Amino acid sequence: MNGDVIRDIFVIGGGINGCGIARDAAGRGYSVVLAEMKDFASGTSSASTKLIHGGLRYLEHYEFRLVREALMEREVLWAMAPHVIWPMRFVLPFQKGGLRPAWLIRLGLFLYDYIGGRKLLPATRTLDLAKDPAGGPLKKLFRKAFEYSDGWVDDARLVVLNARDAADRGADIRTATRVVTARRENGHWAVETENVETGARENFRARMLVNAAGPWVDKVLSTAFGRNDVHNVRLVQGSHIVVKTKFSDPRAYFFQNPDGRIMFAIPYQEEFTLIGTTDRDYQGDPRDVRISDAEIDYLCASASEYFAEPVKRDDIVWTYSGVRPLFDDGASKAQEATRDYVLKVEGGDGQAPLLNIFGGKLTTYRRLAESALEKIGDAIGAKGDRWTAGSRLPGGDFKVDGFDAEVKGLSARFAFLAPAHARRLVRLYGTRAAAMLDGAKGIDDLGRHFGSDLYEREVRWLMKEEWARHAEDVLWRRTKRGLHLTAAEAAVLEDYMAAAQAAPH
Image (cartoon, rainbow, N blue to C red; front, side):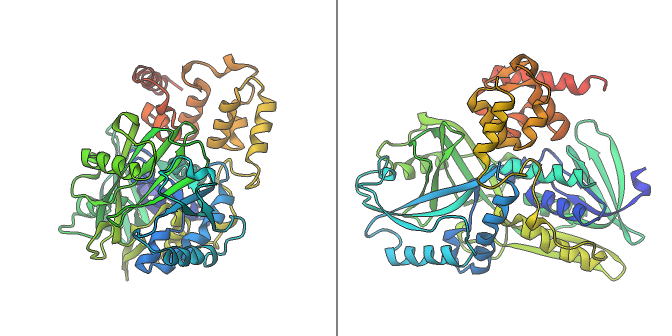
Protein backbone atom coordinates (compact mmCIF):
# COMPACT_ATOMS: atom_id res chain seq x y z
CA MET A 1 0.00 0.00 0.00
CA ASN A 2 1.24 3.51 -0.83
CA GLY A 3 0.34 4.70 2.66
CA ASP A 4 2.80 2.22 4.18
CA VAL A 5 5.78 3.36 2.08
CA ILE A 6 7.52 6.59 2.99
CA ARG A 7 8.67 8.43 -0.15
CA ASP A 8 11.27 11.15 -0.07
CA ILE A 9 9.33 13.81 -1.97
CA PHE A 10 5.68 14.36 -2.93
CA VAL A 11 5.26 17.02 -5.66
CA ILE A 12 1.93 18.79 -6.20
CA GLY A 13 1.58 20.15 -9.74
CA GLY A 14 2.40 18.87 -13.23
CA GLY A 15 3.49 22.11 -14.87
CA ILE A 16 7.04 22.87 -15.91
CA ASN A 17 8.28 23.53 -12.35
CA GLY A 18 6.73 20.42 -10.80
CA CYS A 19 7.89 18.12 -13.60
CA GLY A 20 11.33 19.72 -13.68
CA ILE A 21 11.79 19.21 -9.94
CA ALA A 22 10.50 15.62 -10.11
CA ARG A 23 12.94 14.81 -12.94
CA ASP A 24 15.94 16.37 -11.20
CA ALA A 25 15.10 14.68 -7.89
CA ALA A 26 14.51 11.24 -9.43
CA GLY A 27 17.82 11.53 -11.29
CA ARG A 28 19.61 12.11 -7.99
CA GLY A 29 18.10 9.01 -6.41
CA TYR A 30 15.21 10.43 -4.41
CA SER A 31 11.93 8.51 -4.39
CA VAL A 32 9.34 10.83 -5.90
CA VAL A 33 5.57 10.97 -6.36
CA LEU A 34 4.00 13.68 -8.51
CA ALA A 35 0.27 14.44 -8.57
CA GLU A 36 -1.27 16.60 -11.31
CA MET A 37 -4.93 17.55 -10.92
CA LYS A 38 -5.65 17.56 -14.69
CA ASP A 39 -3.12 16.97 -17.48
CA PHE A 40 0.49 18.04 -17.81
CA ALA A 41 0.83 21.68 -18.84
CA SER A 42 -2.93 22.13 -18.73
CA GLY A 43 -2.52 25.48 -16.96
CA THR A 44 0.13 28.17 -17.28
CA SER A 45 2.80 26.00 -18.88
CA SER A 46 0.94 25.56 -22.19
CA ALA A 47 -0.32 29.15 -22.36
CA SER A 48 3.03 30.87 -22.80
CA THR A 49 4.38 32.83 -25.77
CA LYS A 50 6.53 29.70 -26.29
CA LEU A 51 9.90 31.42 -26.02
CA ILE A 52 13.20 30.41 -24.49
CA HIS A 53 14.48 33.91 -23.93
CA GLY A 54 16.48 36.12 -21.65
CA GLY A 55 13.67 38.65 -21.37
CA LEU A 56 15.02 41.76 -23.04
CA ARG A 57 12.38 43.98 -21.45
CA TYR A 58 13.26 42.77 -17.94
CA LEU A 59 16.49 44.80 -18.19
CA GLU A 60 14.33 47.92 -17.87
CA HIS A 61 13.20 46.69 -14.47
CA TYR A 62 16.83 45.95 -13.41
CA GLU A 63 16.24 42.19 -13.23
CA PHE A 64 19.88 41.54 -14.19
CA ARG A 65 20.27 38.26 -12.30
CA LEU A 66 17.14 36.80 -13.87
CA VAL A 67 18.13 37.96 -17.37
CA ARG A 68 21.68 36.61 -17.07
CA GLU A 69 20.47 33.24 -15.77
CA ALA A 70 17.86 33.02 -18.53
CA LEU A 71 20.36 33.97 -21.24
CA MET A 72 22.76 31.30 -20.03
CA GLU A 73 19.97 28.71 -20.11
CA ARG A 74 19.04 29.25 -23.77
CA GLU A 75 21.83 27.13 -25.21
CA VAL A 76 21.74 24.62 -22.32
CA LEU A 77 18.07 23.87 -23.01
CA TRP A 78 18.56 23.86 -26.78
CA ALA A 79 21.18 21.13 -26.35
CA MET A 80 18.87 19.17 -24.02
CA ALA A 81 15.94 19.09 -26.41
CA PRO A 82 16.82 20.15 -29.99
CA HIS A 83 13.58 18.63 -31.27
CA VAL A 84 11.25 20.89 -29.24
CA ILE A 85 13.61 23.88 -28.80
CA TRP A 86 15.39 25.73 -31.58
CA PRO A 87 16.92 29.17 -32.24
CA MET A 88 14.86 31.98 -33.67
CA ARG A 89 15.83 35.45 -34.84
CA PHE A 90 13.71 38.39 -33.68
CA VAL A 91 13.26 41.64 -35.58
CA LEU A 92 12.66 44.73 -33.45
CA PRO A 93 11.47 47.58 -35.73
CA PHE A 94 12.62 51.04 -34.65
CA GLN A 95 10.77 54.32 -35.18
CA LYS A 96 12.21 57.74 -34.37
CA GLY A 97 10.32 59.36 -31.55
CA GLY A 98 9.17 55.96 -30.38
CA LEU A 99 8.88 54.59 -26.88
CA ARG A 100 12.58 53.79 -26.43
CA PRO A 101 15.54 55.65 -27.99
CA ALA A 102 17.93 53.77 -30.29
CA TRP A 103 20.84 54.10 -27.85
CA LEU A 104 18.84 52.40 -25.09
CA ILE A 105 17.84 49.53 -27.38
CA ARG A 106 21.47 49.13 -28.54
CA LEU A 107 22.67 49.08 -24.93
CA GLY A 108 20.07 46.47 -23.99
CA LEU A 109 20.99 44.29 -26.95
CA PHE A 110 24.71 44.67 -26.19
CA LEU A 111 24.09 43.38 -22.67
CA TYR A 112 21.85 40.69 -24.12
CA ASP A 113 24.66 39.49 -26.38
CA TYR A 114 27.43 39.48 -23.80
CA ILE A 115 26.22 38.80 -20.24
CA GLY A 116 24.84 35.35 -20.91
CA GLY A 117 27.75 33.35 -22.32
CA ARG A 118 26.33 33.14 -25.86
CA LYS A 119 28.35 30.67 -27.98
CA LEU A 120 26.22 29.26 -30.79
CA LEU A 121 23.46 31.82 -31.21
CA PRO A 122 24.31 34.59 -33.71
CA ALA A 123 24.83 38.15 -32.44
CA THR A 124 22.68 41.24 -32.85
CA ARG A 125 22.76 43.19 -36.11
CA THR A 126 21.06 46.25 -37.58
CA LEU A 127 18.69 45.90 -40.54
CA ASP A 128 17.77 48.31 -43.32
CA LEU A 129 14.08 47.49 -43.70
CA ALA A 130 13.99 49.04 -47.16
CA LYS A 131 16.31 46.27 -48.36
CA ASP A 132 15.85 43.38 -45.92
CA PRO A 133 12.91 40.98 -46.51
CA ALA A 134 11.85 41.54 -42.89
CA GLY A 135 10.59 44.96 -43.96
CA GLY A 136 8.19 43.49 -46.54
CA PRO A 137 5.16 42.79 -44.28
CA LEU A 138 5.62 46.03 -42.28
CA LYS A 139 4.32 49.52 -42.84
CA LYS A 140 6.79 51.66 -44.76
CA LEU A 141 7.22 54.12 -41.89
CA PHE A 142 9.66 51.62 -40.33
CA ARG A 143 13.08 52.13 -41.91
CA LYS A 144 15.40 50.42 -39.44
CA ALA A 145 15.29 47.40 -37.15
CA PHE A 146 17.49 45.47 -34.78
CA GLU A 147 17.74 41.70 -35.13
CA TYR A 148 18.74 39.48 -32.21
CA SER A 149 18.63 35.82 -31.13
CA ASP A 150 16.43 33.93 -28.72
CA GLY A 151 14.79 30.52 -28.79
CA TRP A 152 11.44 28.89 -29.52
CA VAL A 153 9.97 26.04 -27.49
CA ASP A 154 6.99 23.73 -27.75
CA ASP A 155 6.05 24.48 -24.14
CA ALA A 156 3.59 21.65 -23.46
CA ARG A 157 5.94 19.07 -24.93
CA LEU A 158 8.81 20.36 -22.80
CA VAL A 159 6.67 19.65 -19.74
CA VAL A 160 5.60 16.15 -20.74
CA LEU A 161 9.16 15.20 -21.74
CA ASN A 162 10.31 16.15 -18.23
CA ALA A 163 7.51 14.01 -16.80
CA ARG A 164 8.43 11.10 -19.08
CA ASP A 165 12.08 11.28 -18.09
CA ALA A 166 11.19 11.54 -14.40
CA ALA A 167 9.11 8.37 -14.74
CA ASP A 168 11.91 6.63 -16.64
CA ARG A 169 14.16 7.43 -13.67
CA GLY A 170 11.73 5.90 -11.19
CA ALA A 171 9.28 8.65 -10.26
CA ASP A 172 5.63 7.71 -9.69
CA ILE A 173 3.78 10.12 -11.97
CA ARG A 174 0.00 10.60 -11.60
CA THR A 175 -2.31 12.72 -13.74
CA ALA A 176 -6.01 13.39 -13.03
CA THR A 177 -5.01 13.22 -9.36
CA ARG A 178 -6.08 15.89 -6.89
CA VAL A 179 -4.56 16.34 -3.46
CA VAL A 180 -7.47 16.32 -1.02
CA THR A 181 -5.58 16.81 2.24
CA ALA A 182 -1.99 17.05 3.39
CA ARG A 183 -1.13 17.00 7.06
CA ARG A 184 1.94 16.51 9.19
CA GLU A 185 1.91 13.20 11.04
CA ASN A 186 4.73 11.61 13.07
CA GLY A 187 7.42 13.66 11.33
CA HIS A 188 6.14 12.91 7.83
CA TRP A 189 3.48 14.18 5.45
CA ALA A 190 0.26 12.19 5.19
CA VAL A 191 -1.25 12.99 1.78
CA GLU A 192 -4.66 11.85 0.56
CA THR A 193 -5.35 12.01 -3.18
CA GLU A 194 -8.41 11.50 -5.34
CA ASN A 195 -8.57 10.40 -8.97
CA VAL A 196 -10.82 13.08 -10.45
CA GLU A 197 -12.23 10.70 -13.07
CA THR A 198 -12.87 7.56 -11.00
CA GLY A 199 -13.20 9.04 -7.51
CA ALA A 200 -10.69 6.48 -6.17
CA ARG A 201 -8.69 7.71 -3.18
CA GLU A 202 -5.15 6.83 -2.14
CA ASN A 203 -2.92 7.67 0.79
CA PHE A 204 0.77 8.51 0.56
CA ARG A 205 3.46 9.32 3.06
CA ALA A 206 6.44 11.52 2.26
CA ARG A 207 9.35 13.10 4.06
CA MET A 208 8.91 16.38 2.18
CA LEU A 209 6.17 18.10 0.23
CA VAL A 210 6.71 20.40 -2.76
CA ASN A 211 3.86 22.76 -3.64
CA ALA A 212 4.41 23.57 -7.34
CA ALA A 213 0.76 24.15 -8.20
CA GLY A 214 1.41 27.34 -10.17
CA PRO A 215 -1.68 29.59 -10.14
CA TRP A 216 -3.23 27.25 -7.58
CA VAL A 217 -0.29 27.40 -5.13
CA ASP A 218 -2.25 29.57 -2.67
CA LYS A 219 -5.41 27.51 -3.19
CA VAL A 220 -3.50 24.33 -2.28
CA LEU A 221 -2.33 26.02 0.89
CA SER A 222 -5.88 27.06 1.77
CA THR A 223 -7.73 23.85 0.82
CA ALA A 224 -5.38 20.90 1.25
CA PHE A 225 -3.61 22.50 4.22
CA GLY A 226 -6.60 24.29 5.70
CA ARG A 227 -4.96 27.72 5.81
CA ASN A 228 -6.84 30.98 5.56
CA ASP A 229 -5.95 34.35 4.02
CA VAL A 230 -2.86 33.21 2.10
CA HIS A 231 -1.72 35.60 -0.61
CA ASN A 232 1.67 34.90 -2.12
CA VAL A 233 1.07 35.16 -5.86
CA ARG A 234 -0.19 37.83 -8.20
CA LEU A 235 -2.20 36.34 -11.04
CA VAL A 236 -1.51 38.04 -14.38
CA GLN A 237 -3.51 37.05 -17.46
CA GLY A 238 -1.72 36.63 -20.76
CA SER A 239 -3.73 35.98 -23.92
CA HIS A 240 -2.72 35.13 -27.49
CA ILE A 241 -4.33 34.92 -30.90
CA VAL A 242 -3.31 32.64 -33.76
CA VAL A 243 -4.07 33.99 -37.23
CA LYS A 244 -3.56 32.89 -40.81
CA THR A 245 0.06 33.56 -41.62
CA LYS A 246 1.01 37.21 -42.04
CA PHE A 247 4.51 36.67 -43.40
CA SER A 248 6.67 33.92 -44.87
CA ASP A 249 9.96 34.94 -43.22
CA PRO A 250 11.21 32.46 -40.55
CA ARG A 251 12.06 35.36 -38.24
CA ALA A 252 9.71 36.67 -35.56
CA TYR A 253 8.86 40.27 -34.72
CA PHE A 254 9.17 42.09 -31.40
CA PHE A 255 6.84 45.10 -31.27
CA GLN A 256 6.84 47.95 -28.73
CA ASN A 257 3.41 49.35 -27.94
CA PRO A 258 2.79 52.98 -26.91
CA ASP A 259 1.38 51.83 -23.54
CA GLY A 260 4.75 50.36 -22.59
CA ARG A 261 3.79 46.74 -23.26
CA ILE A 262 5.63 44.58 -25.75
CA MET A 263 4.19 42.06 -28.18
CA PHE A 264 5.48 39.29 -30.40
CA ALA A 265 4.38 38.07 -33.83
CA ILE A 266 5.89 34.62 -34.37
CA PRO A 267 5.79 32.02 -37.17
CA TYR A 268 3.64 29.19 -35.77
CA GLN A 269 3.01 25.62 -36.85
CA GLU A 270 4.12 26.25 -40.46
CA GLU A 271 0.87 27.91 -41.59
CA PHE A 272 0.06 30.50 -38.91
CA THR A 273 1.25 33.54 -36.99
CA LEU A 274 1.09 33.67 -33.18
CA ILE A 275 0.47 37.14 -31.73
CA GLY A 276 0.72 37.98 -28.03
CA THR A 277 0.76 38.57 -25.22
CA THR A 278 -1.36 40.75 -22.97
CA ASP A 279 -0.59 41.63 -19.36
CA ARG A 280 -3.44 42.34 -16.99
CA ASP A 281 -4.24 41.38 -13.41
CA TYR A 282 -6.64 38.47 -13.00
CA GLN A 283 -8.92 37.91 -10.02
CA GLY A 284 -10.99 34.84 -10.94
CA ASP A 285 -10.44 31.07 -10.85
CA PRO A 286 -7.46 30.24 -13.13
CA ARG A 287 -9.40 27.35 -14.71
CA ASP A 288 -11.98 29.85 -16.04
CA VAL A 289 -9.52 32.16 -17.78
CA ARG A 290 -10.53 33.11 -21.33
CA ILE A 291 -9.40 35.77 -23.75
CA SER A 292 -11.67 38.81 -23.52
CA ASP A 293 -13.11 40.85 -26.37
CA ALA A 294 -11.00 43.77 -25.17
CA GLU A 295 -7.83 41.68 -25.39
CA ILE A 296 -8.71 40.50 -28.91
CA ASP A 297 -9.27 44.10 -29.97
CA TYR A 298 -6.01 45.15 -28.32
CA LEU A 299 -3.92 42.47 -30.02
CA CYS A 300 -5.48 43.08 -33.44
CA ALA A 301 -5.07 46.86 -33.15
CA SER A 302 -1.50 46.68 -31.82
CA ALA A 303 -0.33 44.29 -34.55
CA SER A 304 -2.06 46.42 -37.17
CA GLU A 305 0.07 49.39 -36.11
CA TYR A 306 3.05 47.50 -37.55
CA PHE A 307 1.79 45.23 -40.33
CA ALA A 308 0.84 46.75 -43.67
CA GLU A 309 -2.01 44.24 -43.88
CA PRO A 310 -4.23 44.78 -40.82
CA VAL A 311 -4.92 41.93 -38.40
CA LYS A 312 -8.67 41.43 -38.21
CA ARG A 313 -10.94 39.27 -36.07
CA ASP A 314 -11.80 37.23 -39.17
CA ASP A 315 -8.14 36.19 -39.42
CA ILE A 316 -8.21 34.44 -36.03
CA VAL A 317 -8.23 30.63 -36.12
CA TRP A 318 -7.54 29.99 -32.42
CA THR A 319 -7.04 31.83 -29.16
CA TYR A 320 -5.62 30.76 -25.84
CA SER A 321 -5.21 32.42 -22.49
CA GLY A 322 -3.39 31.59 -19.30
CA VAL A 323 -2.60 32.98 -15.88
CA ARG A 324 0.97 33.56 -14.79
CA PRO A 325 1.45 33.10 -11.04
CA LEU A 326 3.98 35.85 -10.32
CA PHE A 327 5.38 36.32 -6.84
CA ASP A 328 3.53 39.30 -5.40
CA ASP A 329 6.26 41.90 -4.94
CA GLY A 330 3.85 44.83 -4.76
CA ALA A 331 4.55 46.16 -8.28
CA SER A 332 1.99 48.70 -9.41
CA LYS A 333 1.58 47.34 -12.95
CA ALA A 334 1.12 43.76 -14.06
CA GLN A 335 3.91 44.08 -16.65
CA GLU A 336 6.30 45.33 -13.93
CA ALA A 337 5.77 42.42 -11.51
CA THR A 338 8.86 40.25 -11.17
CA ARG A 339 9.19 37.15 -13.37
CA ASP A 340 11.84 35.80 -11.00
CA TYR A 341 11.10 32.77 -8.84
CA VAL A 342 10.92 32.59 -5.07
CA LEU A 343 11.32 29.36 -3.10
CA LYS A 344 10.20 29.21 0.53
CA VAL A 345 10.67 26.32 2.95
CA GLU A 346 8.43 25.88 5.97
CA GLY A 347 8.90 23.37 8.76
CA GLY A 348 11.98 21.65 10.09
CA ASP A 349 12.97 21.06 13.72
CA GLY A 350 10.96 17.85 13.78
CA GLN A 351 8.22 19.17 11.49
CA ALA A 352 7.98 17.68 8.01
CA PRO A 353 9.24 20.36 5.60
CA LEU A 354 7.14 22.04 2.90
CA LEU A 355 8.67 23.80 -0.11
CA ASN A 356 6.45 26.37 -1.86
CA ILE A 357 7.33 27.43 -5.41
CA PHE A 358 6.29 30.95 -6.43
CA GLY A 359 6.74 32.44 -9.90
CA GLY A 360 9.30 31.31 -12.45
CA LYS A 361 9.32 31.04 -16.23
CA LEU A 362 9.90 28.32 -18.81
CA THR A 363 13.44 29.43 -19.58
CA THR A 364 14.68 29.14 -16.02
CA TYR A 365 12.77 26.00 -14.99
CA ARG A 366 15.91 23.83 -14.90
CA ARG A 367 17.76 26.30 -12.69
CA LEU A 368 14.70 26.62 -10.48
CA ALA A 369 14.70 22.83 -10.09
CA GLU A 370 18.38 22.89 -9.10
CA SER A 371 17.66 25.58 -6.50
CA ALA A 372 14.72 23.53 -5.23
CA LEU A 373 16.94 20.45 -4.90
CA GLU A 374 19.40 22.47 -2.81
CA LYS A 375 16.62 23.32 -0.38
CA ILE A 376 15.35 19.74 -0.43
CA GLY A 377 18.86 18.51 0.32
CA ASP A 378 19.18 20.92 3.24
CA ALA A 379 15.83 19.78 4.62
CA ILE A 380 15.95 15.98 4.27
CA GLY A 381 19.53 15.22 3.26
CA ALA A 382 21.33 15.66 -0.03
CA LYS A 383 21.52 12.95 -2.68
CA GLY A 384 23.53 13.01 -5.87
CA ASP A 385 25.07 15.97 -7.68
CA ARG A 386 23.74 18.44 -10.21
CA TRP A 387 23.29 16.52 -13.43
CA THR A 388 20.68 18.07 -15.71
CA ALA A 389 22.83 20.68 -17.50
CA GLY A 390 24.50 18.09 -19.72
CA SER A 391 21.52 15.75 -19.99
CA ARG A 392 19.10 15.07 -22.84
CA LEU A 393 15.35 14.91 -22.68
CA PRO A 394 13.64 11.91 -24.32
CA GLY A 395 14.13 12.03 -28.09
CA GLY A 396 16.66 14.85 -27.88
CA ASP A 397 19.79 12.73 -28.24
CA PHE A 398 21.07 14.32 -31.45
CA LYS A 399 23.19 17.36 -32.28
CA VAL A 400 21.70 20.83 -31.95
CA ASP A 401 22.19 21.34 -35.68
CA GLY A 402 21.10 17.80 -36.57
CA PHE A 403 17.34 18.23 -36.93
CA ASP A 404 17.26 18.10 -40.73
CA ALA A 405 19.47 15.00 -40.67
CA GLU A 406 17.03 13.32 -38.27
CA VAL A 407 14.13 14.10 -40.60
CA LYS A 408 16.08 12.74 -43.56
CA GLY A 409 16.86 9.56 -41.64
CA LEU A 410 13.26 8.99 -40.59
CA SER A 411 12.03 9.63 -44.15
CA ALA A 412 14.53 7.14 -45.53
CA ARG A 413 13.50 4.44 -43.06
CA PHE A 414 9.75 5.07 -43.45
CA ALA A 415 9.51 6.19 -47.06
CA PHE A 416 5.69 6.17 -47.03
CA LEU A 417 5.61 9.27 -44.79
CA ALA A 418 4.86 12.57 -46.49
CA PRO A 419 7.76 15.04 -45.95
CA ALA A 420 5.68 17.32 -43.71
CA HIS A 421 4.50 14.33 -41.67
CA ALA A 422 8.06 13.11 -41.09
CA ARG A 423 9.15 16.61 -40.10
CA ARG A 424 6.30 16.98 -37.63
CA LEU A 425 7.03 13.63 -35.97
CA VAL A 426 10.70 14.51 -35.47
CA ARG A 427 9.70 17.93 -34.11
CA LEU A 428 7.52 16.27 -31.49
CA TYR A 429 9.33 13.03 -30.68
CA GLY A 430 12.89 13.41 -31.96
CA THR A 431 14.72 10.09 -32.11
CA ARG A 432 11.74 8.34 -30.47
CA ALA A 433 9.66 8.85 -33.63
CA ALA A 434 11.37 5.78 -35.10
CA ALA A 435 10.36 3.69 -32.06
CA MET A 436 6.76 4.86 -32.46
CA LEU A 437 6.74 3.79 -36.12
CA ASP A 438 8.71 0.58 -35.65
CA GLY A 439 7.48 -2.22 -37.86
CA ALA A 440 5.31 -0.05 -40.10
CA LYS A 441 5.77 -0.81 -43.82
CA GLY A 442 3.09 1.50 -45.20
CA ILE A 443 0.61 4.15 -44.18
CA ASP A 444 -2.06 1.51 -43.51
CA ASP A 445 0.13 0.12 -40.74
CA LEU A 446 -0.43 3.36 -38.80
CA GLY A 447 -4.05 2.33 -38.20
CA ARG A 448 -7.13 4.46 -38.09
CA HIS A 449 -6.90 7.93 -39.61
CA PHE A 450 -8.40 10.70 -37.45
CA GLY A 451 -7.77 13.65 -39.75
CA SER A 452 -4.82 15.72 -40.98
CA ASP A 453 -1.78 13.43 -40.49
CA LEU A 454 -2.89 12.01 -37.13
CA TYR A 455 -3.14 8.21 -37.03
CA GLU A 456 -3.97 5.57 -34.45
CA ARG A 457 -0.32 4.56 -34.03
CA GLU A 458 0.57 8.03 -32.72
CA VAL A 459 -2.53 8.27 -30.51
CA ARG A 460 -1.79 4.87 -28.96
CA TRP A 461 1.80 5.97 -28.32
CA LEU A 462 0.63 9.16 -26.60
CA MET A 463 -1.77 7.20 -24.41
CA LYS A 464 0.84 4.61 -23.44
CA GLU A 465 3.97 6.75 -23.18
CA GLU A 466 2.73 10.25 -22.41
CA TRP A 467 -0.38 9.89 -20.21
CA ALA A 468 -2.83 11.28 -22.81
CA ARG A 469 -6.42 10.51 -21.75
CA HIS A 470 -8.60 12.82 -23.83
CA ALA A 471 -8.70 14.25 -27.33
CA GLU A 472 -7.84 17.67 -25.90
CA ASP A 473 -4.59 16.24 -24.47
CA VAL A 474 -3.58 14.95 -27.89
CA LEU A 475 -4.84 17.78 -30.07
CA TRP A 476 -3.79 20.82 -28.05
CA ARG A 477 -0.91 19.79 -25.79
CA ARG A 478 0.92 16.70 -27.13
CA THR A 479 0.44 17.91 -30.71
CA LYS A 480 -1.23 20.96 -32.24
CA ARG A 481 -3.37 18.94 -34.64
CA GLY A 482 -6.37 20.69 -33.14
CA LEU A 483 -5.60 23.49 -35.60
CA HIS A 484 -6.29 21.05 -38.45
CA LEU A 485 -9.04 18.68 -37.24
CA THR A 486 -12.73 19.55 -37.38
CA ALA A 487 -14.95 19.43 -34.29
CA ALA A 488 -16.53 16.24 -35.64
CA GLU A 489 -13.11 14.60 -36.12
CA ALA A 490 -12.10 15.64 -32.58
CA ALA A 491 -15.30 14.05 -31.22
CA VAL A 492 -14.48 10.79 -33.02
CA LEU A 493 -11.01 10.84 -31.47
CA GLU A 494 -12.48 11.42 -28.00
CA ASP A 495 -14.82 8.45 -28.43
CA TYR A 496 -11.95 6.27 -29.65
CA MET A 497 -9.74 7.17 -26.68
CA ALA A 498 -12.55 6.58 -24.19
CA ALA A 499 -13.21 3.13 -25.67
CA ALA A 500 -9.51 2.29 -25.72
CA GLN A 501 -9.14 3.16 -22.03
CA ALA A 502 -12.22 1.19 -21.10
CA ALA A 503 -11.09 -1.91 -22.95
CA PRO A 504 -9.43 -4.66 -20.86
CA HIS A 505 -5.64 -4.67 -21.14
